[in-house]
Length: 112
Image (cartoon, rainbow, N blue to C red; front, side, top):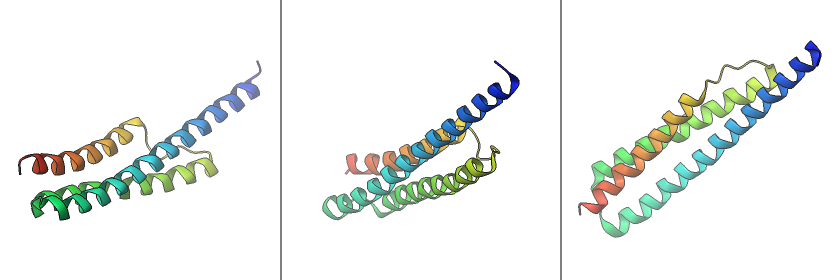
């Protein structure tokens, strides 16, 4: 295998990893947005505290915003050939925001 073939294969792997990260962020942002809508519907029925609802919605909004921002970075990375959008640790942080938002609401709803 020549050096050119190795570079081409490395570039293809990088692009595929970026596309997978993009899809991951797309699904996580959709899930966080849908969770926020479900929480608002449950809030009307159950009467969960306003503070916990606000905390939860803020965490979910941060998750969606961060996902959309990084999706933009990844789109630029795919076009430019660079890799500035970060790694897997950022994906874990976004999941943390999502789980935190969901847990804040669920904790309050279960303590009613």
